[in-house]
View 1 (spheres, rainbow, N blue to C red):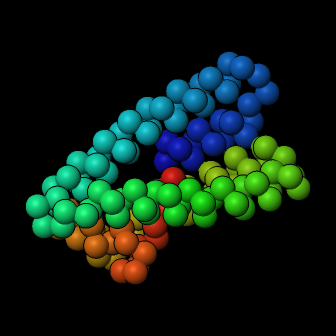
View 2 (cartoon, rainbow, N blue to C red):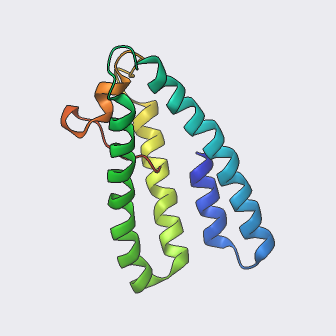
View 3 (cartoon, one colour):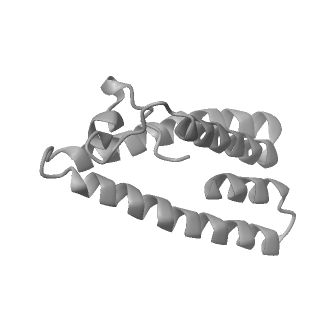
Length: 125
């Protein structure tokens, strides 16, 4: 949710101070999220030596799935709408993670990352 809050902050930012505050929230959120994700992936390294490659592939796929629509929305409606749309994506992802029937454990996370096994492949939200 930190990324979503930061996107809302960027969307409302009218000056340097608010944009800086949103950037700080993004940095803190990223530190917690990416360290945790890589730790979970690292636990699976013994079972699947390609798990980090799958994570990077999922991150890149997710990046493109966000970048292309963001460029289209940016040209049509401006930065604020792009950031609010990204915040909405973060909210949807958070709701999906919280309401998930069978949460992924550290033993299944590597399988879920690949797009072929039902993973979203989104590494940005």
